[in-house]
Every structure is written in structure tokens, then in C-alpha cells.
Length: 426
Image (cartoon, rainbow, N blue to C red):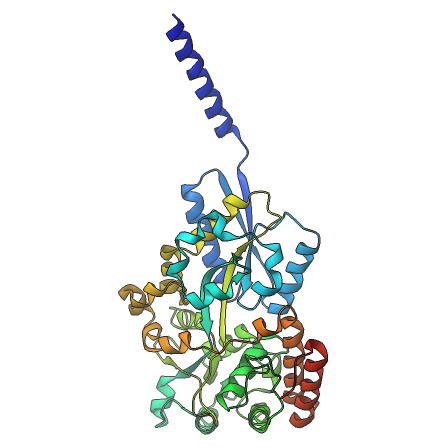
């Protein structure tokens, strides 16, 4: 009799617990992500896959501004109020040092078991005071896109120097306009006053032996002859081989012009490849990618980019939020994103995955570009990198728009950087 009572009590307890579980309100997780190219769509697809196996979790994927500075400003508003509204943030590779205090340590939520799968440099970048504040999601490096069909038609090779790019862009531009396309331009890139211009200009300077704004040893070195030379060259592109409006272009503006068949060359990130090869693209099968051109240094330079997933310290459900973040950055999810949207994985073994290489061949041929990309001076200038970058891209933009001369802009920039950071001038 006592046994029956005990069994009955146990069954009641189990049933009661089960009813509580199934009656409980679903856990709601909100992710702040980007919308450049296919980012938003792919993030929502990944969230849907997670929810298929976690029916008690509801994930909302928010669209945030494309411009990096605008997105950072939005994030800071949430952090200042310790808002619980966002659980997972997509953060730029340049932000871990500045924003670390707002994120949990993912090592406490299982990341230690998978960290070694990712590029060690990115894990190191995302580690602050021994805490892994973000899991790598995808990496980036600047690339040169070119119309392979037009290069063949005009008897040209992919340019290896900026001088060769100028000559090829002008020749193709003149030829296409003679054929009736008055909207055709030789070269499009990101010239608006935002972080994208910092990336472009850093590539120009580094490729021409002009340094990296602030050297890795903490010395400001932006005002030098090689930097002046390449900045003046870039300014000369505006209105000649690049449209006057390029000074207002971000990534999608450049991609839309190139993918619309109205440009011979484009500087952009890897995400543009899959979109350019899509069924509705007029240039599908007609373009290819190569490293960016070289200047006086003799070697091209690609700015290191990429995005991570970080879990807010103010999330009411950090365990589940961390599980969502680690799922979205997992091997299988990165493979899907690589194949379907040409997002560069941060998991090393995916660069030898045959399905990935078949979908995006340049992941193999340009592997060295990605692992040797030039870092922005975000670590050496933390926590003031955003101000450093803003001073930099505004100075460059003033030269591109003709508001200032290159020599004056860079000399003043050097002094401004010294006043801001206290770092020495070379």
C-alpha cells in the first residue's frame, strides 16, 4: 500500500512538473543583426532552424543600421540603460575592447570546447582580460571584383597595381560609353564618411607603404609621403573613373552599381560574390575576384573585417542567449552561410571543405588574403578607436570632396590623433 502511494505521489509530481513545462511562457530571445546583402535573411533562417529543435524558444531578429557608426550608436543607447531588450548583439571585429564590459564571458557557457576550431587571431581579438566576450561568426577582407568578360573583350589582365587599375578602368569605361551605356563607370568603392571609408583608405595607405594610421607599436605615422601620394591618387578617381556620387557610397551602393552591369571594377567584401552570381543578377558568370592592387609597397593590402556574436550581460536569459549565439556560429551554420551567401567562415576546417570550395572557389585561391589581412588600429587605440576612426575617415573624406588638400588634412589629422590618444608622433 505504501509503495502504491509513493508511486502515485511520484506520478502526480511528474505530471505537475510536465504541465508546468508545457504551460510555461516561451523564452524570448532577441538578436540585433545587420541587413547588408543577405545578412538579415540568413540570420532569420538560422534562427528558424534553432527554433525547430527548441520549441520553447522564440527568436526575434532585429534589423539594425548598415552604417557601422549608426549601429554602434544604437547599441550604446541600450548599454547606457542596461536594457534587457536585446539578448545577442552582432558586433564588429573592432568593438570587443570597447564594449567588453557589457557582455558575458562565453567561456562560462560552453565556448571553451569549440574556441580552438576558430582562427586563433580572432579568438584572441575577442578575448578581453581572459574573457571571451564574443564568438566569431564570419570574417572579412577587402577584395577587388572585376568584370572578367570585359577584361577579355578589351584585352586586359586583372590589375596588380593602382596604376594598372586606373588605366584599365578608363579604357573599359570609355569603350562601354561609346557603345551607348552613359551610366557606366570604371571603379566603384565605399567613399562615404563612415567606417567603410576607413577600411578603403587603410588599404590604400598600407598598399603604398603609407602605414596603418597608428602603428602596432603605438606610434602615429599617418603624415608621410607615401600616404599623401596614394590619397591624392584616390581623390583623382572621383569624377574620372569613379562617379561623383562615390563620396556617398557604402557597400550596397557600390554592389548595386556593379551588379547592375554599370562598373568594371569594385572594391567590396566577400558577401557580394554570392549575390552577384544569383539567378537575377545581370553579371552572373561574368565576373571574378582578385587581391586588391599594390602601390609603392609592391603588395596589395586588404583590411581585416568580420563580425561576432556577443551576449548581453543584461539579458534575462543569458544561458539560452549564449546557446543561440554558439549555435548560429557553429560549423554547420557557418557552412550554410558560406555556401549560400559567401560569408567567410571563422572555422578553419571549412576552408578545405569541398562543398564550400565548389560554391565559393576564391575561399581557397585567396586564402592568404584573408589570413594576412591588415588590422585596423582598434586594439592599440582602445577604448578610443571609434573617435580615431571618425577623425581618420572625416579627414580622408574632406580630401575626396575637395574641401581640403591631402597634405593639410593628414598633418592636422596627426596632431588631432595625438591630442586624442596621447600617443607619440613618428
